[in-house]
Picture 1: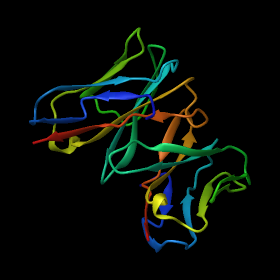
Picture 2: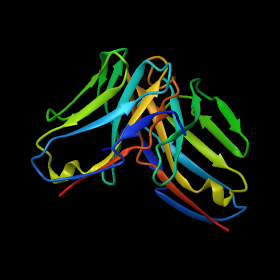
Picture 3: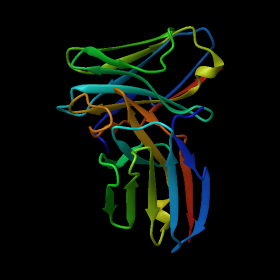
Length: 109
Length: 115
Protein backbone atom coordinates (compact mmCIF):
# COMPACT_ATOMS: atom_id res chain seq x y z
CA UNK A 1 0.00 0.00 0.00
CA UNK A 2 1.37 3.39 -1.03
CA UNK A 3 1.41 6.09 1.61
CA UNK A 4 0.93 8.59 -1.19
CA UNK A 5 -1.57 7.77 -3.95
CA UNK A 6 -1.15 9.55 -7.26
CA UNK A 7 -3.78 9.80 -9.95
CA UNK A 8 -4.08 9.31 -12.78
CA UNK A 9 -1.31 6.78 -13.34
CA UNK A 10 -1.08 7.68 -17.00
CA UNK A 11 -2.25 10.69 -18.99
CA UNK A 12 -1.99 11.23 -22.74
CA UNK A 13 -3.19 14.59 -24.03
CA UNK A 14 -2.84 16.93 -26.98
CA UNK A 15 -0.63 19.99 -26.93
CA UNK A 16 -2.52 23.00 -25.58
CA UNK A 17 -4.80 21.07 -23.23
CA UNK A 18 -4.93 21.61 -19.49
CA UNK A 19 -4.47 18.83 -16.94
CA UNK A 20 -4.40 18.17 -13.22
CA UNK A 21 -2.49 15.49 -11.35
CA UNK A 22 -3.45 14.54 -7.82
CA UNK A 23 -1.49 13.30 -4.84
CA UNK A 24 -3.51 12.02 -1.87
CA UNK A 25 -2.84 10.47 1.51
CA UNK A 26 -4.55 9.71 4.77
CA UNK A 27 -1.44 10.97 6.57
CA UNK A 28 -0.39 14.51 7.32
CA UNK A 29 2.89 15.61 5.80
CA UNK A 30 5.26 18.27 7.10
CA UNK A 31 5.96 19.27 3.52
CA UNK A 32 5.32 18.01 0.04
CA UNK A 33 7.47 18.15 -3.06
CA UNK A 34 6.81 17.62 -6.75
CA UNK A 35 9.46 16.21 -9.08
CA UNK A 36 9.66 15.58 -12.81
CA UNK A 37 11.69 12.71 -14.19
CA UNK A 38 12.61 12.17 -17.82
CA UNK A 39 13.65 8.79 -19.23
CA UNK A 40 17.24 7.90 -18.37
CA UNK A 41 17.59 10.70 -15.84
CA UNK A 42 17.05 11.28 -12.15
CA UNK A 43 14.08 13.23 -10.75
CA UNK A 44 14.34 17.01 -10.73
CA UNK A 45 12.67 19.04 -7.98
CA UNK A 46 9.94 21.39 -9.24
CA UNK A 47 8.55 22.81 -6.00
CA UNK A 48 8.28 22.38 -2.24
CA UNK A 49 5.08 23.35 -0.40
CA UNK A 50 5.05 23.59 3.36
CA UNK A 51 1.97 25.48 4.54
CA UNK A 52 -1.58 24.07 4.34
CA UNK A 53 -3.49 25.84 1.56
CA UNK A 54 -0.30 27.09 -0.05
CA UNK A 55 -0.36 27.74 -3.80
CA UNK A 56 2.81 28.11 -5.84
CA UNK A 57 3.17 28.91 -9.51
CA UNK A 58 6.03 28.00 -11.80
CA UNK A 59 5.29 29.40 -15.27
CA UNK A 60 2.41 27.22 -16.56
CA UNK A 61 2.49 24.92 -13.53
CA UNK A 62 0.37 25.58 -10.43
CA UNK A 63 0.91 23.56 -7.27
CA UNK A 64 -1.47 23.46 -4.34
CA UNK A 65 -1.07 21.92 -0.89
CA UNK A 66 -4.32 20.89 0.79
CA UNK A 67 -5.49 22.76 3.88
CA UNK A 68 -5.02 19.65 6.02
CA UNK A 69 -1.60 18.92 4.43
CA UNK A 70 -2.76 15.47 3.32
CA UNK A 71 -3.10 16.12 -0.40
CA UNK A 72 -1.70 18.16 -3.24
CA UNK A 73 -2.39 18.89 -6.87
CA UNK A 74 -0.36 19.91 -9.88
CA UNK A 75 -2.16 21.78 -12.65
CA UNK A 76 -0.53 22.38 -16.03
CA UNK A 77 -2.01 24.99 -18.34
CA UNK A 78 -1.60 24.68 -22.12
CA UNK A 79 0.58 21.58 -21.95
CA UNK A 80 3.51 21.33 -24.34
CA UNK A 81 5.44 18.29 -25.60
CA UNK A 82 8.35 19.37 -23.39
CA UNK A 83 6.14 18.69 -20.34
CA UNK A 84 6.23 14.97 -21.13
CA UNK A 85 7.68 12.93 -18.29
CA UNK A 86 7.02 11.18 -15.00
CA UNK A 87 5.64 13.44 -12.30
CA UNK A 88 6.29 12.34 -8.73
CA UNK A 89 4.97 13.76 -5.51
CA UNK A 90 6.95 13.17 -2.33
CA UNK A 91 5.96 13.87 1.25
CA UNK A 92 8.11 14.38 4.31
CA UNK A 93 6.95 11.70 6.76
CA UNK A 94 8.99 11.88 9.93
CA UNK A 95 12.59 12.14 8.84
CA UNK A 96 12.03 10.40 5.53
CA UNK A 97 10.84 11.38 2.09
CA UNK A 98 8.08 9.09 0.78
CA UNK A 99 7.35 9.08 -2.95
CA UNK A 100 4.12 8.38 -4.78
CA UNK A 101 4.09 5.91 -7.68
CA UNK A 102 4.00 8.75 -10.19
CA UNK A 103 1.93 9.97 -13.11
CA UNK A 104 3.27 9.40 -16.61
CA UNK A 105 2.33 12.38 -18.76
CA UNK A 106 2.56 12.30 -22.53
CA UNK A 107 1.83 15.45 -24.49
CA UNK A 108 1.35 14.91 -28.20
CA UNK A 109 2.03 17.65 -30.74
CA UNK B 1 23.54 18.20 -15.14
CA UNK B 2 22.75 18.05 -11.40
CA UNK B 3 26.40 17.93 -10.34
CA UNK B 4 25.91 14.50 -8.76
CA UNK B 5 27.89 11.73 -10.42
CA UNK B 6 27.22 8.03 -10.24
CA UNK B 7 29.26 5.12 -11.51
CA UNK B 8 28.84 2.81 -13.20
CA UNK B 9 25.93 3.79 -15.43
CA UNK B 10 25.05 0.18 -16.19
CA UNK B 11 25.86 -3.00 -14.33
CA UNK B 12 24.99 -6.54 -15.33
CA UNK B 13 25.74 -9.34 -12.92
CA UNK B 14 24.54 -12.76 -11.80
CA UNK B 15 22.47 -13.87 -8.83
CA UNK B 16 24.48 -14.36 -5.66
CA UNK B 17 27.10 -11.79 -6.63
CA UNK B 18 28.10 -8.59 -4.86
CA UNK B 19 28.39 -5.14 -6.44
CA UNK B 20 29.36 -1.65 -5.32
CA UNK B 21 27.72 1.50 -6.62
CA UNK B 22 29.53 4.80 -6.22
CA UNK B 23 28.21 8.34 -5.82
CA UNK B 24 29.94 11.71 -5.67
CA UNK B 25 27.73 14.49 -4.31
CA UNK B 26 27.58 18.06 -5.53
CA UNK B 27 30.39 20.24 -4.29
CA UNK B 28 29.46 21.58 -0.85
CA UNK B 29 26.65 19.09 -0.19
CA UNK B 30 27.05 17.18 3.06
CA UNK B 31 24.13 14.79 2.76
CA UNK B 32 23.82 11.78 0.45
CA UNK B 33 20.70 9.72 -0.13
CA UNK B 34 20.24 6.39 -1.89
CA UNK B 35 17.05 5.34 -3.64
CA UNK B 36 15.88 2.29 -5.54
CA UNK B 37 13.44 2.69 -8.43
CA UNK B 38 11.64 -0.30 -9.93
CA UNK B 39 8.49 -0.65 -11.99
CA UNK B 40 6.51 -2.38 -9.26
CA UNK B 41 7.76 -0.48 -6.20
CA UNK B 42 8.35 3.00 -7.59
CA UNK B 43 11.01 5.21 -6.01
CA UNK B 44 11.93 3.90 -2.58
CA UNK B 45 14.21 5.64 -0.09
CA UNK B 46 16.97 3.35 1.13
CA UNK B 47 19.33 5.29 3.37
CA UNK B 48 20.73 8.75 4.11
CA UNK B 49 24.14 9.87 5.31
CA UNK B 50 25.09 13.29 6.59
CA UNK B 51 28.73 14.25 6.90
CA UNK B 52 29.81 10.63 7.26
CA UNK B 53 27.13 9.55 9.72
CA UNK B 54 23.99 7.55 9.01
CA UNK B 55 21.03 9.96 9.37
CA UNK B 56 17.95 8.00 8.30
CA UNK B 57 17.08 4.51 7.17
CA UNK B 58 14.30 3.48 4.83
CA UNK B 59 13.43 0.21 3.15
CA UNK B 60 16.99 -1.05 2.91
CA UNK B 61 17.51 -4.81 2.96
CA UNK B 62 20.03 -6.38 5.32
CA UNK B 63 21.96 -7.60 2.24
CA UNK B 64 22.54 -3.94 1.34
CA UNK B 65 24.88 -1.57 3.12
CA UNK B 66 26.22 1.90 2.51
CA UNK B 67 28.81 4.29 3.81
CA UNK B 68 29.93 7.86 3.32
CA UNK B 69 33.64 8.54 3.28
CA UNK B 70 35.57 11.56 4.65
CA UNK B 71 35.66 13.12 1.18
CA UNK B 72 31.83 12.80 1.25
CA UNK B 73 31.51 10.34 -1.62
CA UNK B 74 29.31 7.38 -0.86
CA UNK B 75 29.12 3.74 -1.83
CA UNK B 76 26.16 1.39 -1.80
CA UNK B 77 27.07 -2.27 -1.48
CA UNK B 78 24.59 -4.89 -2.65
CA UNK B 79 25.35 -8.52 -1.83
CA UNK B 80 23.79 -11.96 -2.42
CA UNK B 81 22.00 -10.40 -5.36
CA UNK B 82 18.60 -11.68 -6.39
CA UNK B 83 16.65 -11.21 -9.60
CA UNK B 84 14.33 -8.81 -7.76
CA UNK B 85 17.22 -6.46 -7.03
CA UNK B 86 17.26 -5.43 -10.69
CA UNK B 87 16.38 -1.75 -10.66
CA UNK B 88 17.61 1.78 -11.10
CA UNK B 89 19.61 2.99 -8.13
CA UNK B 90 19.76 6.73 -7.62
CA UNK B 91 21.98 8.79 -5.42
CA UNK B 92 20.95 12.29 -4.42
CA UNK B 93 22.70 14.98 -2.42
CA UNK B 94 21.67 18.08 -0.51
CA UNK B 95 23.33 20.81 1.49
CA UNK B 96 21.88 19.89 4.87
CA UNK B 97 20.12 16.75 6.01
CA UNK B 98 16.53 17.93 6.06
CA UNK B 99 14.51 15.57 3.89
CA UNK B 100 11.34 17.14 2.60
CA UNK B 101 12.49 20.75 2.73
CA UNK B 102 16.00 20.55 1.36
CA UNK B 103 16.44 20.41 -2.39
CA UNK B 104 17.77 17.00 -3.28
CA UNK B 105 19.79 16.82 -6.49
CA UNK B 106 19.62 13.43 -8.12
CA UNK B 107 22.35 11.75 -10.09
CA UNK B 108 21.72 9.99 -13.41
CA UNK B 109 21.39 6.60 -11.73
CA UNK B 110 22.94 3.16 -12.07
CA UNK B 111 20.89 0.56 -13.88
CA UNK B 112 21.50 -2.82 -12.24
CA UNK B 113 20.47 -5.98 -14.04
CA UNK B 114 20.73 -9.27 -12.18
CA UNK B 115 20.57 -12.32 -14.43
